[in-house]
Length: 395
Image (cartoon, rainbow, N blue to C red; front, side, top):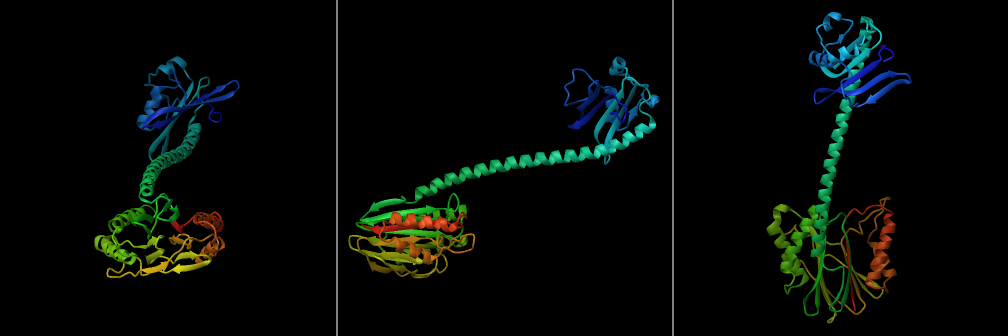
């Protein structure tokens, strides 16, 4: 304003392609007063000037008296400003804003030379305004996309929490005592839902059948696969056949019914009869499980490849005598393959030593020690797989 010799300046920004007052600056005794988004009871500028520049994109000023002699404006009649100029701010051929300047006291303030300088300044201002508008548009789009993303995440989290509740319902209780054995399970999915599933139930007087499966993959996809696995296992669970026979039937059923889905999983089926002192199991592609009797650990080796590969594979069963106080530890590979920030693997040997060091404890206490050590080993690193650890103790 001072450089141009104006006592008032009004900048109009374009909103929905229409000029609206954005800033008003006026000379006062204490200095220049600037008001943003002014609320105007009546116009503080010649509306006819504004409309002309908006319509034509051409500058108009009192320097060119011929161009304004036909204007009949109420503001000019009332205020009678002595010098006026209205400048379009144009960038790449498009109107970006309008700047109105006036001096209410002195004539001839906006000379041809001054106007040329003002037009140059206006050109730079148009570029600045265009960049500011682009930034504002980008910021608004980012804000909008962020809001949409937040809403999507909220809906996904809501769905996942519901899926988690469903998966929890199809799993057996974490802890229970039945038919002379005490079962204690720790299940930690990598996300809300996971690809591990377990089940235990009395299938005939005195005999408890334990099932543990680990589907390839993680998250929702793996969780959906576990639903199919659980459904097919339920149809076979009560059959009076060996664990190996059950896994053989389960493998053939999965391949026959879901071949196009091409999903794979490892699993274990174990029959425990505490009254008769018998234990029989079969494992398909599962890591070696552990049987603790006194201070001796026996590895329960797998009996064949993972489910979903060889349709005609016959899975064997292995049997052992069990006694009061004996303990069984069934787990997925999530723990033993867990690694820390130093790329060290937790490993089977570490797990075996932990169990031996606390062999006199109850299974719930042993599992508590194991998971405490596992968390210390991870040192804050997130687990990279689902973890299921099912233990059983003969009472």
